[in-house]
Image 1 (tube, rainbow, N blue to C red):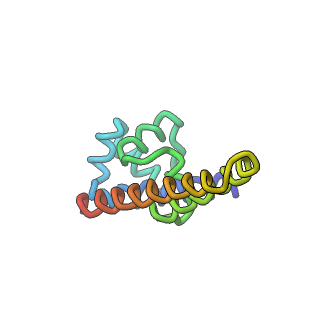
Image 2: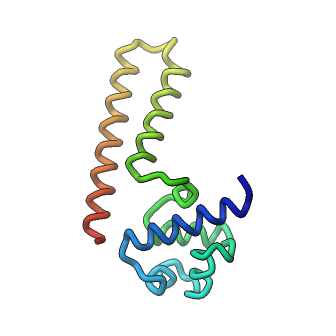
Length: 129
C-alpha cells in the first residue's frame, strides 16, 4: 500500500463519515477547527493532514483516528473483526492456563459488548440522518 492509497482511503472515509452524520464541510471544518478549503482538499485527497488535525477530525466525527483508515469496513464489520481478534488473543494467550468455561464467559461478554456497540452505532446513525 502506498501513501497515495492511504490518502485515498482517508479522504473517502472522512467524506463518508461526514455525510453519514449529515454534516456539511462548513460544519465539520468548524467542529474540527480547520479551514473549509483545507477540509475540501483533504476530502479530495490533495492534502495530507497533520496527526493533530487527524485527531480533531476523528473527534468531530465521533470515531477513533484508526477508523479513518479502515478499508471499506462498516461499523458492524469493524466491531466483529475486533471481537474475533480479542477472542483469538484470549485463546492464544490464556487458554492453557484458564478453564474453558472462563474463556467461554469472556467470549460471551465480548459478544454482548459488540452487540451493544453496534446497536448504539446504528441508533446514532439513524438519529443523525
